[in-house]
Length: 459
Image 1 (cartoon, one colour):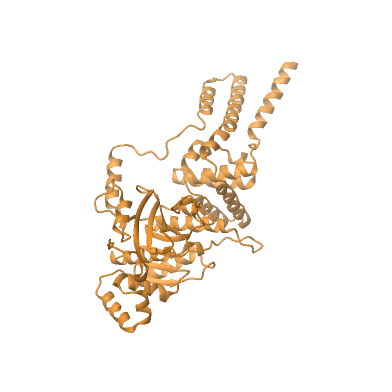
Image 2 (cartoon, rainbow, N blue to C red):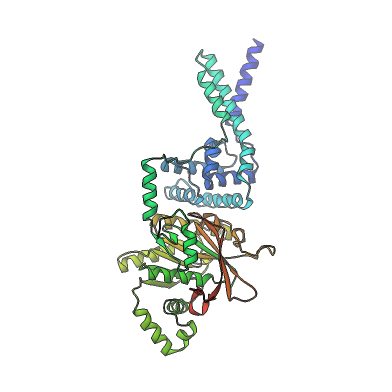
């Protein structure tokens, strides 16, 4: 009898351990949750096995519940924290989630993204925890079935499943055949926006793109990164003017330059007259106006917004108003520049959330809106001081938040050559749709005429 009592007590202890919270450090938990939301492959290897109720903190439990709910709706892992936040906002409107809980989730994401841990290291550390938990579940199932004189074949499957935790799993598989032809045909028909610098547009297309498809793919976010005076605003003027030349409707939201300055730069770019002449000489301005009127161009709407007080939602409201006024919404959104936008989230006591958190929400929301609306979103961001041992500004040089470059489809860095601003190298730091890590230039700058670089080059 004594032996039987000991066995039952051990079974009870094993059963209780299965429902206990995972033994995770608070920072480690934040990294784990953020990685499950932002990394599709990591979720299929680790996140799918996590039980929300077993996460140590209520905030992590809430994130995992929202994450699994969105994945169930979409049928595939996410790869974006913004979709989880969107689900939480929906839950808040229904009264099941509070404002304070959303702020806590934002803080959790901030801690997790800041640490920059290698996903493979996380897999190696989490797999033993999950495997042990799954093996305990198998032991409990075996005990129950044995006591009921039932077959134990399912237990073997549970043990095999436990052994496979952490293994690479296919994500959103597309089978070779009819789907392949559909995807290739869709790629050929994809709308593109040329930036207007031929070498850059051709480099972006890549060798596998359909002939004639040059530039930026529709439904994407592009970020130019550079130091002060490197040409970030000129790059945005370049893109807006190029969109107009292609007959597209562009919306230019300026949070830095005045509307007059933006108009002067656009007019200079499109006509070849100098910005200085347009602003100070009536005759030059009249000639530029006549040259502009002679060109078949798409419309460009320019609006000034207050920096550090404007949200992405404010820009969306403006775009909707433009759509009502003109019969269709702009296809290209230029934001000069997104570092000066803020998110709507604030703490209950009125304190602002961190710059990092604002940046994460702003850039992810711009990217999601571009994809949903099938428009181009092009913006810029300030670079922090780069490593003196590197000649090019790179992805890690984005100021305030690495999230800017992590969610963007295209990232170009602007690099002045020498002490002056007369030569520029454009570095394709990221190209989600083709080849990256490619340099364009050095090219002579043409800032005086509202152009990023002189093209065609004189030399």
